[in-house]
Image 1 (spheres, one colour):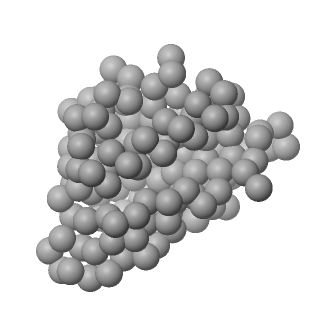
Image 2 (cartoon, rainbow, N blue to C red):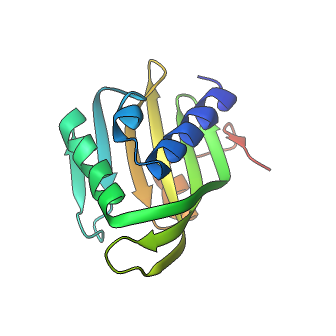
Length: 139
């Protein structure tokens, strides 16, 4: 996939999450997607398969009401992208405001998201992904 194709798909992914359209998000994934939470997350670990990926997305959707999910920067390699996203909204239960940047590492297979791993910061994500000078960078 090209850089514009990957970033367009990630933007669609975020828009659909913001709209709570989990079925449409799942349509952007391959048949056996993987969702990885960091060790210090509330629900750490790997979610493997469509039903587990859906559960991870529903947990996000059930917990937060996003007014904005904005890509702030990215780096793109062959069939993978690291994307920093600003998440703005409120907690659905607490009503607490959210304004936090997270970084996601996406891998793609046959034009669809095959894995998503999230990180608390850019450096951790780019280090894990093996980002190097051959990747294309946002300005």
